[in-house]
Picture 1 (cartoon, rainbow, N blue to C red):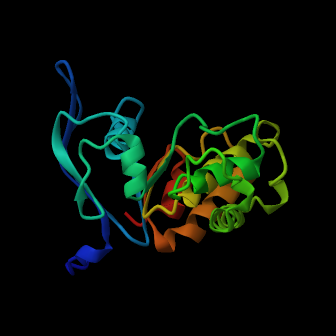
Picture 2 (picture 1 turned 90 degrees about the horizontal axis):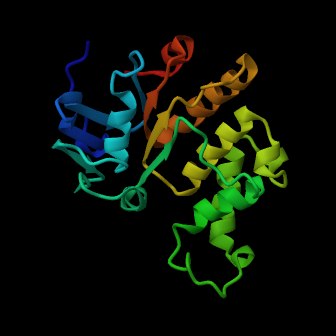
Length: 223
């Protein structure tokens, strides 16, 4: 095993001593980790091991009892999920988190629009924001959903909905991606498409994957 240290510029997210206690139960206890560019890091373990709790602390969904999170050189330990996202973190959840009545295009465009200073200027026409549309188109292309842009999100397959969630994360231009069981509930063909997608986008991101599909874990994970 190489002992060459990882360049600090390639460490997009670090956690030190990350701990979460619920009363007397330590769900996560003193975790140290570095998420490195161009690497997929897998977190594995049985149900109840604390994997989602760890992910939720890194993303700001729950506050740690102790420890620190550094994202892009900034201490984000007590940031909200929205502030973490603005700092460069994207994530998916165990339960698909998309706008089911909206089209695939509208879902991804809304995610891209959240990165612009004009995001909440109600009287502007979203369709006229060229930079937003370009980011949305790129994210949809990366996720392999070009033929589904005009489909209502609730009408596409479960696997495509998971791809859509990744596309929405990519549209926010993250450095770090946290993916909580992205292959859950997928058939073999859908799982293979998701694996190919994650391998295709890992070059420009530091990624952490929580997953029970061991074949996928050993195909994807660098660490």
